[in-house]
Every structure is written in C-alpha cells, then in structure tokens.
Image 1 (cartoon, rainbow, N blue to C red):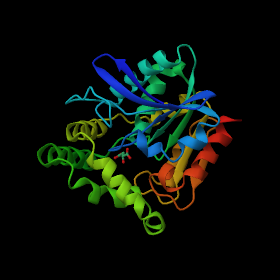
Image 2: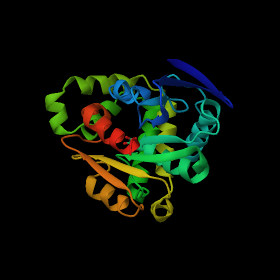
Image 3: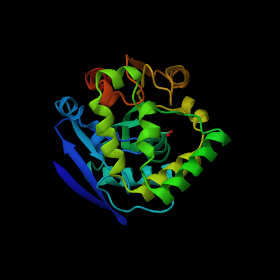
Image 4: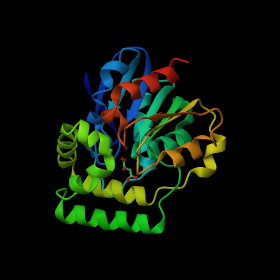
Length: 264
Ligand code: MLT
C-alpha cells in the first residue's frame, strides 16, 4: 500500500505492507525505498513494514539545501508518531540509514523497540573523506548525477554480485539517476558533518543486531564487528558474498538474519 504522510513542509511517500509488529526500513544513499523491494515480501509476512523515501529522495518532497542526519531522524519520528502512536517499532537503517538510526535512537529512543544497523559506521569521516564528499556534492550540484553510478556501483555491489547478478547494476543505476540532484548533494554534505557516535555505543540499551556484507568496502566487517562488541548484548550477522547492499545482493539471507533477531 502506498501512503503519503505530511510532516511539516514535506509530503513523505511511504510503502506500508503486511501485518505484525512494525518494522521501519531506512534506505541508504543515494537511493530510495525501492532498495528494500526484494525483502519486503518476506518481511511483511511477519511485520508491518514501513519503507519511506527520505526527505527529497524518491517520491518524497521537502528537499532542502541543508539537511542533517538529525533532521532525517526527526522526520521519521514524526512519521512514526502518526502511523503508530505510542507503539515502539523495530528499526533497520542501511549505511546513511544507519547514521540516521543512531540519531533516531539518541533523540527519540521511546519510539524504538529494537535496532538493526546494517552496513553502516559509528565513526565520523576523516577530514580527507569529508572534503571529498563536499567536492563530490559540488560536482552533483553543477553536473547532476551522470557520473555517480559509475563511481558508486563498484563500491555498492561485491565483485561476486556483479558477476552473478549483473542486472542489479542496472537497477541501481536507474535508482540513482532518478533522484533529485540537490537532495543527493545536500545528503552528501550532511554525511560529511555527521557526528562520531562511538561514545554512544556503551549507552545503547535496546536489543541490537549488526549486519554486514562479507565484502563491504565502505563499512567493512572488521569495523562493524568492533563497534558491535561495544553495544551490550548486540548480535552480529555477516552476509556471505554480499558487498554494501545485502538487501539487494542476498535478500533471503538478510531477511533470515532480521527475522531470527526480531522473533527472539
Ligand atoms: C550509503 O550507502 O548510504 C552511503 O554509502 C553512505 C556513505 O557514503 O557513507
């Protein structure tokens, strides 16, 4: 079912499917809710899946020149307040979606029952990475998105995936090219200024699952395993053969890891 939820100046597109305890899926950069498409049939057999497009992405409006992980988190909290008032939800964020999930936990902890951090980082960027992001954002503002798929797809999909599922590169290219360049540039700049949350890890008091593709080069398993060890009782699941996007590269195994965790 497609819904539109109005929060302040933005109309959010949200795909809602299934029945059971709510499960919010927060997409990564520079994508939209369709990155969850292959998992929604399996997850929605057990959960009410809530898959929004973030502000300015996909079919959601409200694009701003300046955004932040905090703003995205506040948008989602308000959306959850409208959809499931008083009921904490399971929430899963991939990569930039994970950066947003840290903020959702920090700012709106009462809205969350469980955290699933997927192919994401707790550390902030080094200055060199941050500067590269801001340069990249300037290029996107000037020249739009044409150069992004070629630069990003080899980092998003593992070599194994690119060989065994070659159509996924085309799917991702289409997804990236239909995004609003200004929203993409603003999110890139926002990620360059995101805070380092490593000092928060010991305070996390919700059941947590950390999921990582075996060959993820953006948020590698060693780094994710290390931060998972600092979250009390967190479980860790590695998805064999996958890169940065297990929901597309290995949807079945990723769903199984999520459901094993949410059904505990
Ligand atoms: C994402 O998948 O959301 C991005 O790769 C995050 C990032 O660039 O740090």
